[in-house]
Length: 174
Length: 375
Image (cartoon, rainbow over all chains, first blue to last red; front, side, top):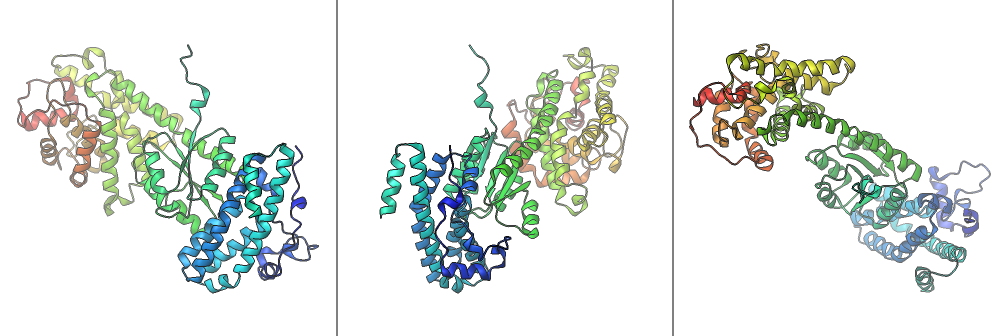
């Protein structure tokens, strides 16, 4: 099976605010001197790594991505609510879960943002999280679009669409 | 008909613990692909319940979880008798040295960084599997002890009880400043593991003595007493080949000294006081308590209160006073163990009459104590 390379599925450029945050964060700086900006070269999702974690099973990887599609909006809303209420423990809990999920799905951009959110909350800088919630939402939008493309691509490779794929398209249409 | 279980029934079980369902799914998928059976728990409490069935020996747990964190789960597992060693891998995004120290202090054996890498997960689980497989050594030790015990059919689940009594006493002693440096967790575990070998030397006692239904002559009694030396010699032979094996050293000391008495009147060497190895002093009390509270052909099972009184009376003569002190602190646990592993129900009333003469079991210090006190 011809698996998609990460460059095929991450064409969406990083948003300005995410890029600015990336430049502030030394650990995000690419080792590649040719990279103009760390997140210019960053991928929304590292498919090769995701499939390696899923033993090359695109059906299973697809199921995981669909689970993520279904729940991420709720998690973002819970983060926003907790941050607005200055409820650091609640915010940290949801951010931590989202960070873990992003890591498992090799959603590099979201993983970096949520990692930083966790650190900020831990260091009692929840106000800075509030100021960057838009970055989170932008990245989640980017990610959902990429996941949609990826699922369609996998569906094409595997032949007819599964009920899950149909469900996925319906979710994206919403 | 195939009498052997299918291969799938022999897969190693791994318990994964995480409050995030997606994370559980991904770990499970990766582990199943490696050929493992996977059990799932959403939190530490669920995990402990699953572990109580004794079928799972390797746990991969997230660190940050509500209700019970991974660290708390590690501590709970280490402080609970789950029937064997549980290999613990903490799945964590905590990367600092302090976190590593905290995790390992709580009882974790290894760490896997989040998000996990399939190849790393595979090799770390294999490392854990190697450690867990060392327990086959423990099983071999127990099987050997059971084989020796099988020649002496009266004793029921004596070995299991002595193991647990000894473990309980060692654990209690470790809490006192006097023994804190001498008794580490490994010592407690090794006493638990090797106390089953205390009577291994009985395999060398002729049937005519060991299985004699009637009274032992003085000469036969002397033969019976050699089981302590025979056991020590057997284990010495193993120690010669594996001199660094601490479990063999402790097993040897227990076999050699569990019939020694604090006042120097025991056998085989007549050692006195602290010259008797601590492990031997511990198992001595455990063995006597079990003999007193178990039914024998020549006596009924004494109730706990009677056994307690005999042991307290033997403090400073038969038994190390510190070990007796520890026993009094944990006597409720002794009763629990007896109830959990005891099968003898023929309870003799206090002051029951003893048959005169030297019985074969009087090679056990227990019977000597019983005759001394009650006879």
